[in-house]
Amino acid sequence: MFYQFCLSAVLAIFISFAANCSAQENSAGVAGFQATQTYGKITEIGKLSEARASHTATRLKNGKILIAGGMERNGVFFNDADIFDPKTNNFAQAKNKMSIKRVSHTATLLLDGKVLLVGGWSNRDVPEMSAEIYDPQTEKFTSIKNANRRRSGHTATLLANGKVLITGGFDGKENLSEAEIFDSQNNSFTLIGKMRNARAVHTATKLADGRILLVGGETNRGQILASAEIFDPKTNNFSLTKAMNVVRYKHDSILLKDNRVLVFGGSDNRDWNGQYKSAEIFDAATNEFKPTGEMNSARFKIEGTAVLLKDGKVFIGGGGESAEVFNPLTNTFIKTTGEFGTPLHYATVTLLDDERALIVGGYGNGTRETGPISTDRAWIFKL
Image 1 (cartoon, rainbow, N blue to C red):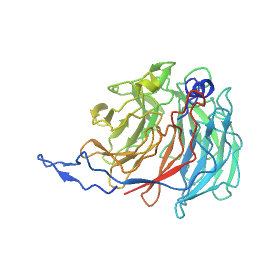
Image 2 (image 1 turned 180 degrees about the horizontal axis):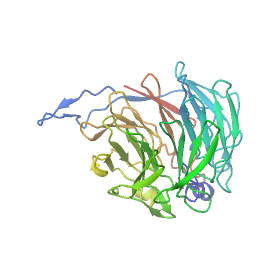
Image 3 (image 1 turned 30 degrees about the vertical axis):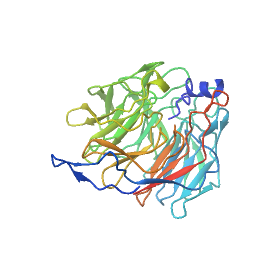
Image 4 (image 1 turned 90 degrees about the vertical axis):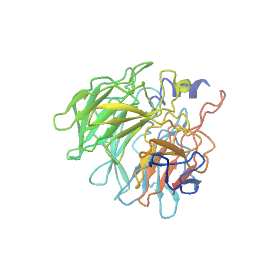
């Protein structure tokens, strides 16, 4: 996510300056890919109403995608939203706007089909405490009670009981260890204690048993974590696991079909100069991370840009000029056909009901004169 866009990092930048691949058997009898093969294809489609990065994209229960907020560049923040209709592959501006502009917020689909939007930046001063609900039935955004902390670069994860766990983030002065729970029954936020480490621009992944794995992030300015911890919703407690093999932030993670967790990309404290191709896999049975094959491209600023496909593979569509797919049977990454033409930082990737994936917005490297500028372009990945 944006995390100051990072604000200390990214806003400073803005201011200062295919064919399907069939599995083949190798000599050991394990399904694998040849390096020259690709898997699936990305194709450009219609454009958004605004150029957006560090926005959110949420698949609604009717299959449409709510794309909310984000920014074009420093000072150009949005309070409007687009609705993507997968039946027509078209974007339409939503009828109503959010209560405020939001960049680097979170958006969580609740059990009743509404969407909770929390925090983010509405200006360049401090992150928001505010929250609101989008109702697809009325197509309106409605403000609710504030969260207990200002947050950007935080995570929001739907729990099995319908509540939402909100962890960490940056409050404008420091990174937070505080966590809180949103209860949709009364639209209220309650502090529940602290993580074992302060974290911002970390990831949160729901495990098969309902617990939440929190990985990496920045704990103090320039201090990146290799540590990970697990939240247990039965006790509201956090416990440390074994650490990753490297420090990571601005990375991504996703639960695989075999209940392992793929953690990939991100960077160390060198940020743009410390981007990773590396990936590792967390096994909840042993609480350990083990290295796996490398990606084809180094990627960071990619949280929320991976989706699990029906066949168990993972499509990754952010942080680079091309996309790729992870095969958990071989622990390898393979490229897709097609190019974005720019590295999509802080883009979004959303799985559609028909197993395609929608890739939206993000920004490239820009120039010293202009700084990074977001795109209004969008693409579809399909097999």
